[in-house]
Image 1: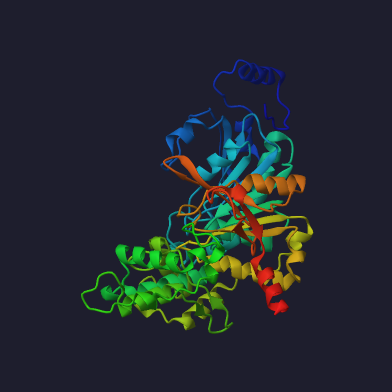
Image 2: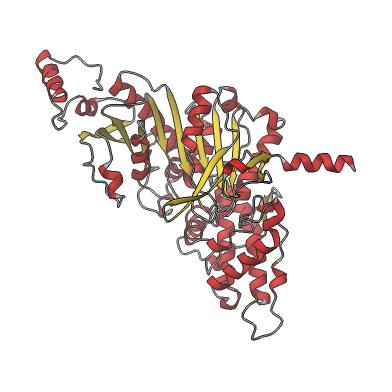
Length: 519
């Protein structure tokens, strides 16, 4: 039984042992004592034992997953690193079977809430786990108005303070520090992951950054730009049938580029499909796209430019069309983008999308942020030098956060640190063909990044490939290796194209460079 280093009376100690031995419902004991833990700027607000399968979260969660939860000690706390801070965290501690490790989990969008499903997954694997509401409640960015400290909390401070506090709670409960500490997050949680690696290299031994919104301000700009074009231009909208038609045309043009026709683009960045090929030749032709719709498709794919830095702000990739909406990017991307400009850039709650100023406002948003939310610093050297391991992944068909954000950042790290050989021992990016935002899509989209990261951190086994699966009707119908970027999975020439064993990871960029040299 987990214990806290504290002098307890012999009678109380005997009572606790008897309770556990008899496997009776957990009673207040060592877990409840965590309420008396004293940490600077920290107030413990809850410390309670939760029986196996009895937890009732404040949000809707899969019932089977709840029933499968083990018994754990649930600790809630409020952190106040600044006068205006009000950071809520929860730390869950397995009552038995702790694997000796700690895992922090991420959030989504501007969400100010504890990530209960992610906590459940982590504790189900034996981890002590923690989550934060990032210092506010609700899904809006309205918290930022007139409260700059809360913006800092959201940007990076809440995650760091949560991590430091949770490790102390873990040590108090188990009388032992965690052997390894991990971060696991996707989307906004991926941004938090990158911020940790860049700003606090000592916090985690291993980090998973899924579809990271690391270029937060630019994603907001892209989503707002498209919404501005389409809000009042019905004729320029790509409706569901139009998007399906466009997607089929993309696959017809580029599917075979990777050597196998399988309904997936292994590297969409190499697809040169032009929507112009779908231009209508007659006004009554409904199997084509109008000039206005063609321009919309081109804008969806196209980059913007930061007017100050001249950095390209990537668009969505070819192959992502089925995830688009009538107003372009996803509803979440539009809402997050609108909130960002209203409450963080212009600080005017009545600001409307119609006032967006294109490349000029791209630059303004990044300048106002000044690195508080964006996670663009390519200097991962401190994290890598201390032996940290970072796995980043992104779906090539992500309709919400451009996968180009990930490939662009990876290339910037390579350039900053002196080449791929300088980072390969600690940082690898995996691009998933056909996968949407943090999962879903037409391609294999289920994989165990945590197991791959554990092997890398704890055994030194670097992930040369990670097998992903796709299921239809709960039956796996395709497996495929995800390869460390810029490698891609190539068909070996025989066997089923639905079996990962028949694919190998190859660096096509280097092979093309060698071919160019031969000529």
